[in-house]
Image (cartoon, rainbow, N blue to C red):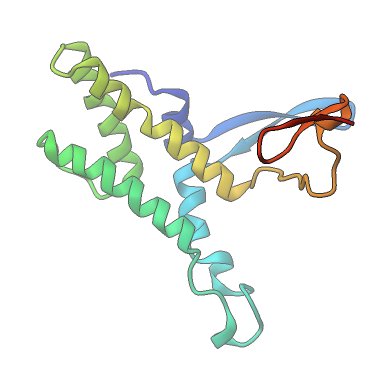
Length: 164
């Protein structure tokens, strides 16, 4: 069987990340990203999402649902194109997708451009899931001095340069 890429392994299997804690490092174990994404669709089992009254709680995390649906659609559409029966279990279908994709490429039944396009999906999915779970830090630049102006030169919107 074909070895899973790092992204595909994180999507379908438990995985470990080394994190810094205080003075040292430790291993943090995580469930498959697909399971983490699936658990986000109905936050907290709809127990605490949004308010105390039932009618004010969040029903769905639409971004998570949209991403999960996209992953399912892409993987299962390609399995159908390759005449492979989808199992209905997404992690198994993703492993089948990856295995068959690599088999087709290794036997020269698929060109490099198509392979690279399809092989990039798991990386994109893993990044997108992780960004939903642990959003990237955003730093507001409003009110901060312009790095170009700090050096004594800056440009206006019209492109003219001025020295400060």
